[in-house]
Amino acid sequence: MKKLIVAILVIALLGLLLFDIYVLTFQKHSNCIEEEINQKQKDVSIFQNQILSYIYENELLDIADCELYKEETPFRLFDIIANEPVLVLRFSEFNCNACVDFLTNQIKENFVDYLTNPKIVLIYDSETMRLPQNIFEKPVFLTQKKNLLGLPMEKFNTPFMFILDKDMKAEQFFVPEMAMPELTNKYLTIIKRRYFKKK
Image 1 (tube, rainbow, N blue to C red):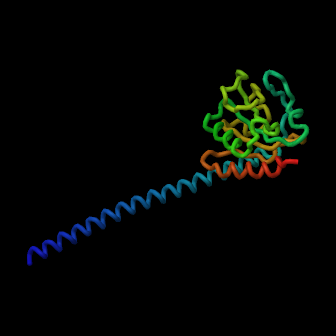
Image 2: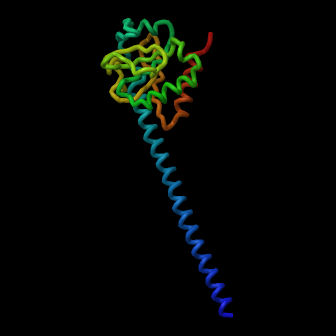
Image 3: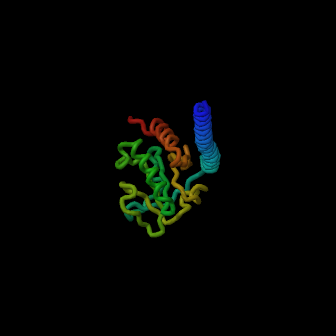
């Protein structure tokens, strides 16, 4: 009889121990998930506030008719965009490589004719007027001036894009975020539908 009582107590204690381990593990796991969700919500909130701030600061600002160089030949920006709206991608040698790669990959995924499409204009500033090898895979307009266009966003070390037409105002301004590629894809889908329809 004593052996049966001892066996029942041992089983009960093991059961309680297993239950405690399960509760502690589940609770810890649950807290981690909750923390990840909270952090993601904070990140999204910060990004939304930043992107809105960037848009409000840069949208519809006048763009300077600056001089750019393509393969050492000078061009005026207005002459590049005079015929129809273009999507301008603005890069700098100070941008992180991952940010540049992210944006160019997003463009390539959304525009199969990226390499040959003259309506996709890349502007890159470099103090040496040189490009890192194979960074864009298509001709790029170069400048030595970091604040060439006159947009507040040029002071930040992140790529951005906008639509530019003969009115010389930044329209549909957008700053891509690597953590949220779906937003960049949505933006490019809308831009493609509005400005890149085949005639």
